[in-house]
Length: 117
Image (cartoon, rainbow, N blue to C red):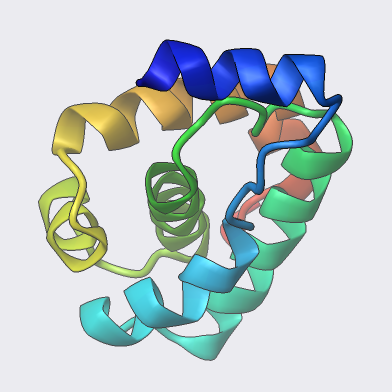
């Protein structure tokens, strides 16, 4: 069935609808009890990821959760990968993998800095 779906998309030159990870941030953040400051930083990270097309083919919940976790670390907010993963309904491994990709592609520490520096 999936093969037929992809064939139809290709033959009819249609674009598959993609869920925007930015729309997932508020839901995950409220479930995990994260601050507004963390949410704002997350949105900056995700906008850059979308512009650089890092998000292509990645699950929106996993990407949003990873960006939220990175924002927590940068803001010194005390949340574990497990906390964020449970709030997002993804695995901790997903968060680790997406975090690694975001850090490498966006040079997270250099571009966004940390509050302690």
